Image (cartoon, rainbow, N blue to C red; front, side, top):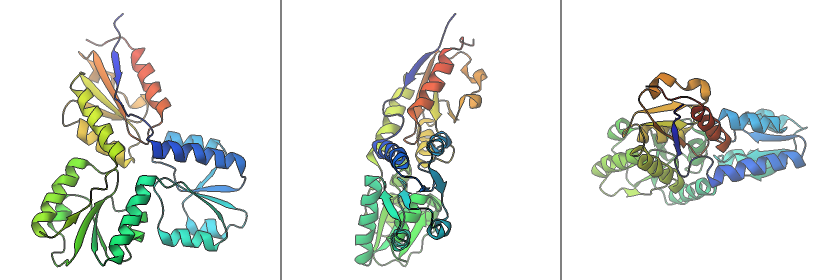
Length: 287
C-alpha cells in the first residue's frame, strides 16, 4: 500500500497574536461569568466553536451588549475595534479585556497620528473587514478604502496630502501593485507598509514548499482574509485547493500525485491542519 508523503509548510497555523487572543479569551471566560466576546475571535468556524464550547458568549451587536446589564466583561478580539466602540464600552462600565493584535494596534496608532497631521489616509483593505472598520475609526472622516487595483486607478485625484497604509493581512503582491499605481497618481504619496510580517513569512514558506510537492492544500476558513491571500499566492505556482475540512477534499485531484503540501492561514487551528494531514496519510495513492 502506497501512501502520500505529507509536508506541512513552516509558520502554518495560529500566529502569536491569534494564539494569545485565543488562549486568553478562554482563560478570561473560565475566570469570569457573564463575559462576551465582541465578534468572532478570528475568521475560523472551528476556533469559534471551541470558544463557544468554553462558555463564552459571542455577540457583535454593540447596542445589545451595552444595554445588557447582566454582561460585566467584554473581550475585544484580535482585529481590534474603533475608538468610538471602546469609548461606548467604557462608558457603560463594562470590564474591558483588550486582546487586539499588537501589530493591528500599531496600525491603529499610526492612523491616529497621520490623521492628526491632516493626511488623507488611503487604506488598502476589505471594506467590511473588522480590522479595517477599527482602523478607519482612528482616521476620523479623512480616509478612503481601496480593495484592488481598479479602486486605486479610479481614486479621487484631488487629494492634497495622501498616505497609504494597509490592513495587516492583505496580499503583499497586490500591495506593491497598488503602491505603484498610487505613486504615479500622487508622486508625493508616503507609503507605510503595515502588512503583518508573519503573514508575509507564511506566504513565503508556502511558496517555497510548493516547489517541492505535486499539489498544495491551503487550509482555513473561506472568510479569512489572511488565508485567502495565502491561497491566491500559492496557486500562482502550483495546482492548489482551498479546504476548510475533510469533506472539502476531492480525492480525484490526488491522481498521479505523491507529495502533498499543506499550508494553514494564521487563523487556522493547528489541530485542523493535523486532522487533514492524518486523513490524507490514511489514503492509498491514486494512480
